[in-house]
Amino acid sequence: MSLDRTRGGLLVAFAVFGVIVYEFRTVLDFVGVELPLIPYMAGVFALAGVLLWIVTLTGGWRTDPERDEPA
Image (cartoon, rainbow, N blue to C red; front, side, top):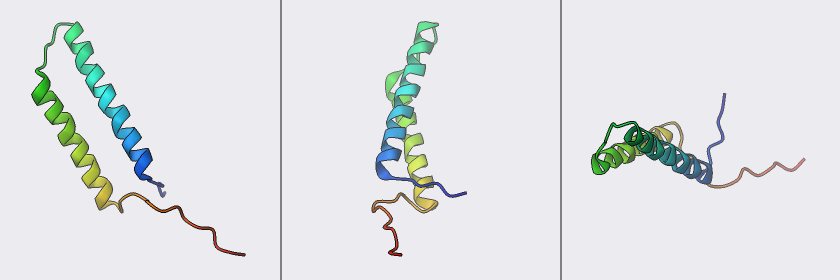
């Protein structure tokens, strides 16, 4: 199975992931579990870096659209 990874799609996915993780921190704060912001965000950025590294190892992202071959 092949995934077509574009740079824009990955950046949007990372942004959505970051917002979800940050909102998870907000929910934990609401129920009484306080997490310090700086180490928490450092962990989020480290996880995003690992995900980018995995994407690079698996072939990177596609920057040019594939052209159709003439018939």
